[in-house]
Image 1 (cartoon, rainbow, N blue to C red):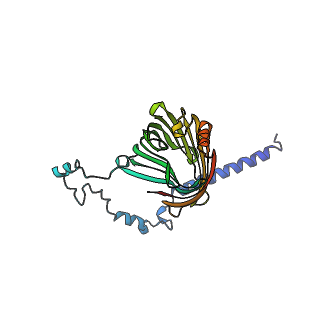
Image 2 (image 1 turned 180 degrees about the horizontal axis):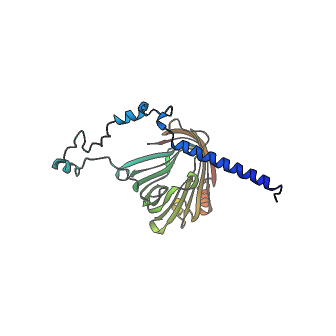
Image 3 (image 1 turned 45 degrees about the vertical axis):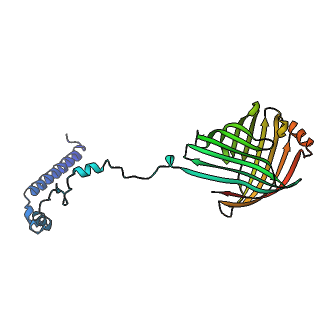
Length: 300
């Protein structure tokens, strides 16, 4: 008995067979196609192939120099070991520096005073000979004068140890000291010196110094300074007492016309302590004194 569902199945089967037959016929047509008759496929017109046929083969890189290198001779080999002099390195060169930090007129209570403080060195980067000198003349008379000769050895880029002798000419009779200490630049460009002295007759002393440059402009510089002196025992002949003997504070404003030459104006304040103050009072001198100063700072 034929049902109504048999008709759609027969229709789908006939359509499937028709598509398969069409695909089989198309495949046979592709296999029999004459590719030489396809337009645009004329291989005789391809220019790229002709140019490649005429290309010459690549040449290899030359293995010899166009300008041959001459062979080494005995004279060439000997020249390698010749000493041609060269330039001197800084660690063995001999250099020098001299600074007159203070050369000034001071308006003192007892008259006009001339004061100086100078230092310099000669040597290399590690070992140097240092010279220091400071003093004061009051009304044409030398009140204080000393000279130090020290050997300095660098222990870091910023610090030196020093050792040598100090010779006092005034006050009192001349006196010789053995000296040793430390000098250099602390943080923020603060220059400092700490020197201990062993003198004749068992006398001992220590001096601390420091100064700092404050740049107000590129050439206008304010320089505060400080100095303190200590002694191990009393020395009435020279007017110094044991302990803290005296201090000096200064403030100087200089203008560097050139880096090597600078006039300045400033003030200083000196004060004596303990037995040193008593000795000054006995001589009719003030215990403390402020002075106006005018001076020059130079270096070479």
